[in-house]
Image: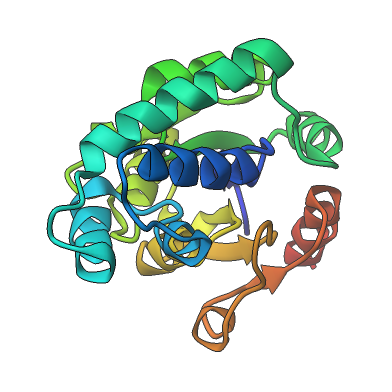
Length: 218
């Protein structure tokens, strides 16, 4: 029986993945790197320790991940300060359902704690979560299982009693390795064949997760 639901953030709850792609590309091009959209899609939810060698292998050993990332954050913050953030369809309905039915909730995100709280707070969604776990709080980020194991531990539930909601293959792999039921709500890309094998469910709308949870009670 599912007792807790653990949420990714970017691209899952908040419509930021398109911004991440846009400003990763812009920041990289500012420094003369030939970064492409497919490179960014490949590092979604990926911890820096894994993203750096991957990008350097694909683009070149001189790729300065942290320099480009710092510039990307600056550009993205400028956009958010001007235009704000949009949440993904169905988030409010799902969060209200979870609260009403007394599910435990957590966020498991690669984004740092300050920006996680800022983003969710700006949408008045922070109050819905019992725990916030960021990659900086664990030894290994996604796709390692650490962040999901930590979230389950903080909620005082077994991983097998948790459902994870993710939009990226790296996030799905992280949840699967932790022994958590992974559900994908695709954002910028559909699951590939390897990812499909790991899924408990896949849906195109957050509110449809309610049906999956209801089925778990049967």
